[in-house]
Amino acid sequence: MSFEYQVRDLSLAEAGRHELRLAEHEMPGLMALRAEFGDSKPLAGARIAGSLHMTVQTAVLIETLVALGAQVRWASCNIFSTQDQAAAAVVVGDGTVDEPAGVPVFAWKGETLEEYWALADRIFDWGTDAEGHRIGPNMILDDGGDATTLVLEGKRFEAAGAVPATTAEDSEEYAVVLEHLRKSLAEDPERWTRIAAGIKGVTEETTTGVHRLDEYFRNGVLPFPAINVNDSVTKSKFDNKYGTRHSLIDGINRGTDVLIGGKTAVVFGYGDVGKGCAESLRGQGARVVVTEVDPINALQAAMDGYQVVRLEDVVETADLFITATGNKDVVMAADIAKMKHQALIGNIGHFDNEIDMAGLARIPGVEKVEIKPQVHEWRIPASEGVAAHSVIVLSEGRLLNLGNATGHPSFVMSNSFANQVLAQIEIFTKPESYPVGVYRLSKQLDEKVARLHLDALGVRLTELTKSQADYLGVDVEGPYKSEHYRY
Ligand code: NAI
View 1 (cartoon, rainbow, N blue to C red):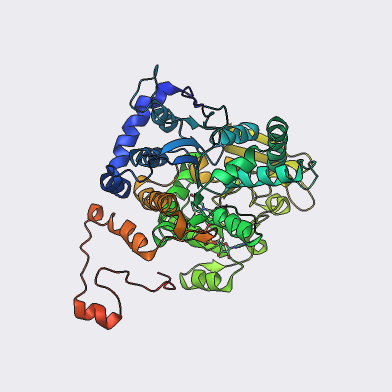
View 2 (tube, rainbow, N blue to C red):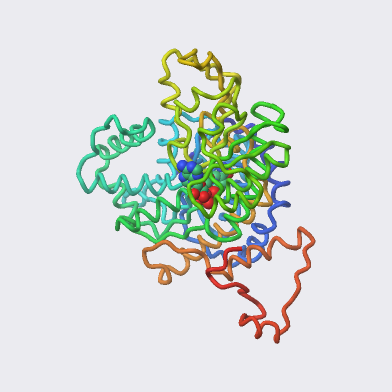
């Protein structure tokens, strides 16, 4: 099969390569795994379909998977998150712009929804074998579950013999998925069923994707094992928290340059992401308030010094609204209509359903003005008791740290992606240990990922004596905590 790829501009590859080179130094976990497994190549024979933000950090992940023997095809998991120079560098690889020799990437910044799903499809299309049969991947590396969902929805509709008609309840995006699968079914009525049968497993990056996997498993439709990478401690307690602590205000600053100090900021959800967001806004001098549905998280927020409120308490007075719940319908159009002039609204949760963008567009007389890509002013006409005003929406309600900025920095992603690599090795090399189900990596591997990042920060770990270890009932080499310890 000829070398295929779809990226914005291969001439960006050199700039991308420089960024990758700097990122490699900041990703000691991934580089250590290259050193450990580069010769034994545990992923030889793996055909990985990757769907994860196509950033500089992801480029280092992709090249690590290749160094461990895998073949890889890649798409982004968000229409705005691709860094075009990183995509170009991965495609060019050791080759040249005229003769690229790297990894097939199908992604660019600013895809339409139709393009997004067509590009997602390309990571499942590995050409044909000698007999002319189509080849698919045997592993998925997913972020948010879109790649897995494409396979499972395709398989479901193939079993039913038809794709259902789109209904008024379907989101614009799901209507695109249905249309895509309609065409696929007409061309090859068993394609997704075959692909699903060939997949050994999926490793999932984020909270929202794990929710989807858990639901597929509960409903008995998950056909292959999954590793929940998100809930490795060295992922969710680092990337979700310290990553967003860095990249939330990066997105706000690059998007708007509005001064954060002194403003009132509302953070919706005080999970790992909400904690990082609240801390970063407070670090800039904002007065941060939090909304929560879970009494435990609400109590945590209160004890951390944040007032816990309901949206209605602050909707007319707050300056910044940041959703971080992974839930839907958190800020509705009717709320936005009450906000003050030039209130700033952004989402950092995985999907774009936290903020009611469709409802906003339906407000009678509303006008959308592009300030620059991924920054829009929505002008809302006067209504009963509320003067005409406008609000600023970042990244059209999609995750703003990747839409308006460049996502999390390399060092924290090295932790997340070291977990991804170990999870891929686990499922690919030990299928007998993973019957269909949703698993986490062992605590040994979690601690290993942390260890790989200590030297770079000058950490000197204290070693347990044998007698201390016996006293605690643990091994000198770890793991040091029980499974239910919460960090
Ligand atoms: P989490 O489950 O730890 O936290 C979410 C919190 O929101 C929970 O405490 C929950 O009680 C609360 N919540 C749910 N519905 C709510 C509502 N209607 N109002 C107020 N609070 C509500 O999840 P985590 O790990 O913090 O992730 C949140 C989202 O961010 C997910 O979609 C995840 O996939 C995404 N994510 C995004 C990243 C990024 O770089 N943008 C990085 C990591 C995760």
